Image (cartoon, rainbow, N blue to C red; front, top):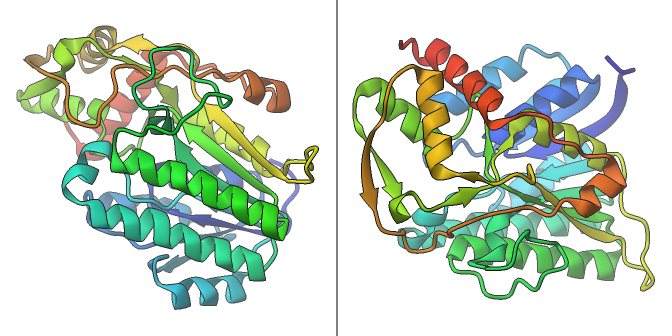
Length: 331
């Protein structure tokens, strides 16, 4: 436990998967944390409320339910909280959902982030962190994926909105001197995770005796990154705003991944061991907007923050299944 600081940290998307775990970590470290979330029904809101129930056990946590696509809501939030650090995690997630629900991504990921940038412009902060995604790399063949790679061919609207956020953030940083850091997350998993993610859906299907859909006939590689490794890194980054580069810009991008891609077949086998039950598999072709592999080059993240993911896929999945059994009272 570190010494408590009264420096307000605003976390958007606080009831989301990464947002919840980050808030809890910051609160355990003694920080004053303000959360905001619109608690939408993209997936079961009761899971989001269960996360919030855990956070409300901390006296240093405050929460506002609100939609960041509403300018007045964001302006009021910043006036009331007066944050010194902002971690913007709120977004409409999901690659496949973006194919049929594009407007949700424009309103949340574009308009919502623009409102946050405008608020930071007029209410200066020490550091703005924002969530990007490994999806921006598209269907690249060259691996591992580096923040130095050219990423101007997104293959899903979700990826396009995340790349747009990076561009918006750089422009605001350049024009208004906002210290900004973008974090490209690679397939984050763990307890209290998102029900739309494959590992969560697979676990549910295994315990219920239902079929799991294995896309691209199982020929997939994912850089699965355990949630505790992710939040450890984010906490390090938020205390280290980028220094000015040769152009005077205080802007940086980092990959947050495990740097160890796992074949989907190995992933499923490990999950079956954790659950103690076999999965019933249905093999399907690749889904539109999906990518065959993700693989993070974390050279810069290791160099600047000593980031060192330590959780193996076996350990991480066993922890997730243990949580799933307890939370849903199965097995």
